Image 1 (cartoon, rainbow, N blue to C red):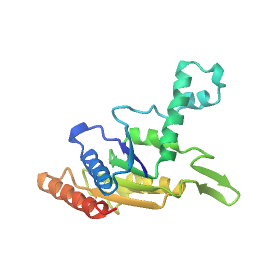
Image 2: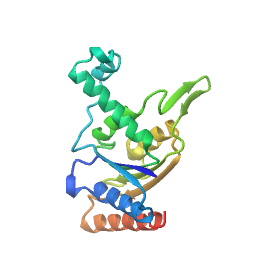
Image 3: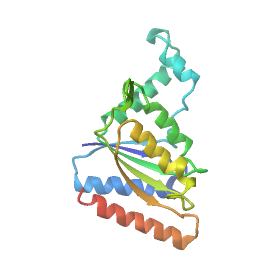
Length: 202
């Protein structure tokens, strides 16, 4: 099995989502040592945001592209190829200002490709990635599950993943991380217990 591990937090070693995605991947590897892991750190190696330059590069003949355009095309191709090759994707998704980090949105924009991950038909859009599983590690300073404030975070990610055909989504959640040390510790311990139960025998 091929696993794509995505981190997007800008907090480095202080990040709760990074700590939890690492534990998910380690638990899955312990259960299945044959898993091949590809890792992408969207904060340390940020993907440029989708722009007019991205579209221009894609629409320019290969031999006519300058160095910047060639890089844009290569970045899009590599990011998409990593995603398409993965059977399971573990995504670290902290909440920043009621949404996902811009680094994660930039990654999403590179894998939302008509004809590759979805297509439009006479009956409407059709997702093309139905065979994949996603483990979504959701962290937040506040409490947002089931609240309007969570619409741009977990709800957005579920809508996008569903759009490209992924319905096998497992959420590992740690909320209220900014509500004091006791609440933070409790939330992290709860998430770690969930990981141990869900993936130790995966």
